[in-house]
Amino acid sequence: MCALFVGTNIKPTRQNIAKLSPVLVNKNRVATLIEFLLRENSYYKSSVNFSQANLDDLLIDEDQAAGEGIPRAVELCHLPSNSALPAATSGYVGPLTDVQAVEDAPAEEPEELVMEAVGYTAGDKTPEDYLNMKATALAWCLDKKAFLKMQAGSRFISERDPGMLTLAFPHLDPWGIGGFSEPLRNESQRKLTFERQVKNLLLQHDGTFEDDPNFAYVCWNIIQKKEVNRQVCFRTKPAEQKALASEITSVAPALTDLIATWQKDPFKKPSTVAEKKAMRVLNKLKLVAKDLRGSSGYKQCRRNEIRALIRKLSTPALFLTINPADICDPLFAAFANLSTQEW
Image (tube, rainbow, N blue to C red):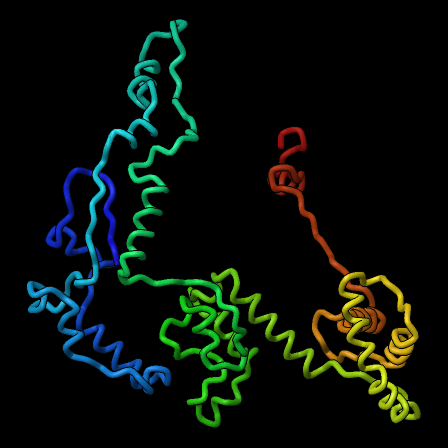
């Protein structure tokens, strides 16, 4: 970890940044967290052990007595100010002094216009430009120094994996103890459904799950897939069931070619005899989705429910009562024994 301080000419030291919480570590808190994870997290129980020697090496010798300080792994760097920053942000006129002088001057036509200088530069005038930073990072990796590589993986994660929440959202569940389908739950807690747990996480007061831009959409996608597996089914007439089962087996090879054709052109019609036969078999099957939220049948069911309520209870009515303001109503003038003109 590297803490970079930019600006000023005073180089930071361990003494003058002792009150900066982001770079300070407390040994007692670290030990408490490690013991908690070893006791409650199944991923830590198998191959992780607590090492007192590593905990003692966390801080430098000067901070061992206090038990709190900057860890050894934190490197403090200082980037002093130079002429590039003022040159990129300063203007030709003072932002406050010149304007104040014009406001205090006599009311006469000024010889020149004094205004705030605002502009945007297209040049790279940062003290450490992008190429230098990229070269520094590349040299660090080529020297085989320690670094972390974060990238998107190509292996799919099952939504029933107990570690799915930690693997997909490590910033929301860093300890790996709040995931779905937790195997360490007791019998009463196993009745907690995925939908109920997601709802509880989103309704937490001042929680991070509600503010995450992707968590709600990913969970909604998982819920929809589960509902499709539970609610969607194919139906046909009882008299055609046995014959249709044998026809499906016979047209199975043609279905693969037909699917590939439709992926390229969804409106292309079957051309071969096998594709036409497969199309006739598909027309005999009826896809039924019961209570599948977001589907056409679900929307039609809700519309029919609204129509039934309107037919039984009549259309909803909204009554508005508009009262004039007190200063405009002549009724108050009558209460005060005043004429309309006097009011």
